[in-house]
Length: 236
Image (cartoon, rainbow, N blue to C red; front, side, top):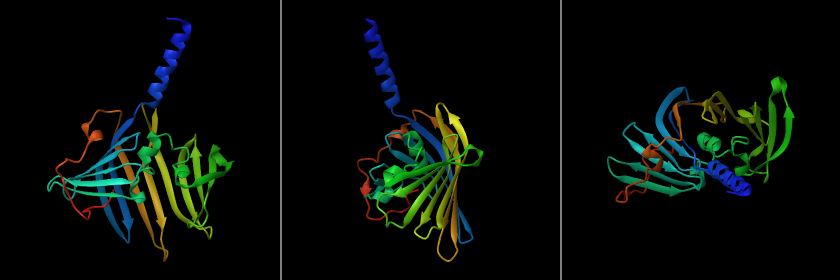
């Protein structure tokens, strides 16, 4: 084969590898502290770089949720063979942590997808990098978003209201490398409510596997599932 042909073939292979679908699965534990009470939800999550996410819950009884970036949501209960379906922007998994990292959107944590533009970048103490984003269309209640990166990995995210007060903070930590993918295994979010109340959500990932062949990645609701008009559980 001529040299030019070899080069073209090599570039095609590299391009195909770069665009190949990536997969990640993990056990997920979410603890929520609100009103002095702690609730814990555990699940197994299966996410692809194309955006389909399947979560398997075991409590109070087994059920599955399927979401994608288009806001399509399905909740399937195998014990009754019932499925609840809805399409709504709030159900989009574009801001899910695993999807952001798999799809290469961790550099801005998906802010560009939700109508924010980079306004400024500054270097902070300890070699940290702070990026400030502003809403393209002001008036949505958020005046700015600050994203802090360490070694180009996001470690802190804060939303500010029109009065300049922080309304939410998110901390990403315990980064680990899986193949060529870096993932934070602990995410802590604080939402500041009215009347000086707040909620704290801690998400911990474990048993992470990259590019596995588990059939749950391609799970589909059975064709004979009975549609229902109201869901029996939340999205996540």
